Length: 390
Image (tube, rainbow, N blue to C red; front, side, top):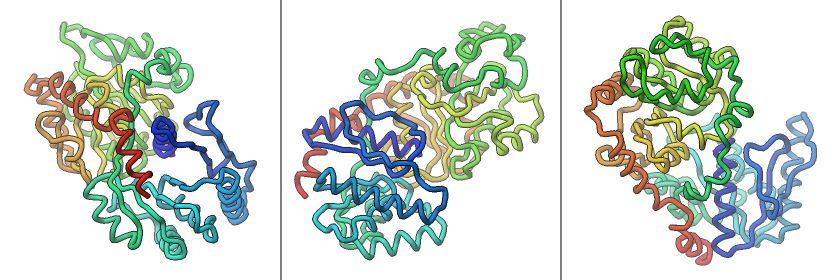
């Protein structure tokens, strides 16, 4: 959900920069991950029923009313399921173009009930256009959405310097996103009791007792989602068992996530250098505390976190997810690609890093240059061409 909202808001800002009038419609009530700007017209639903059937009809009515009030000529919906809901809401509104921004990997299928619902909705009202994240995905989407205009359009990203004013201090992250009393290192590191220091010092210690620079790895995502592959990184890290290394895990806390408990209970409390940050709402400062970002996903559409880490100049290690990992990282000059689900391959890369056999600085610099092509200011012309042409 957070990824959808973030991509939506960045797209809104990009469309505004490109000269389009844009309103934002939120489908569901409740707490939002990202707060829209004050000048943006936002259609927020009123309190919704806990009854799923009633809530579903409330969402349909809210979408229809919002589109009519905004007098929108084009509607872009993020996600296949939410697009299907919007398609039914606009069933009798054929003047408004409906665009679906497909977020998931083509290989990812929702449950049979959800897929049947989506297929029915898109038969009743065929989307005018579909935004595919990669060339690989576009081939699949053309078969999935016959009759729709399929356009290859990867996620948009704001330049890092544009984000700097909104990046909080690390202390703010601690206050808002991390309960420092519950963050755990499973043992002492370099003879220093991890419970006795603030998180930023624990993570960013320049030297351990052997006088060698600590290397900080970062992995982020839903820990209990098998597609994210985070347990693979934990197992690889535990195998290496090097006191010079720290692994930050953003996305879960022990005691709150059963998946974390199961993995850590398996290894006991002897795993060195692992810190769980819990649910981090703003990753910006966390990226600055890391040297290497690992994306072990078995399936991704177009991973925001990977590009964001590359923007910050981190050396990135990614699993060979489909579709289109090589449309972001070449596996040689700007990052490292390992087979999906291969714990030994991740372990091998971590060991090579500790042995100095991988130039993480050079890979990070190349990564930073690579992803500039995804930033808003580089793609305003492309954005205008996509929507002015239709």
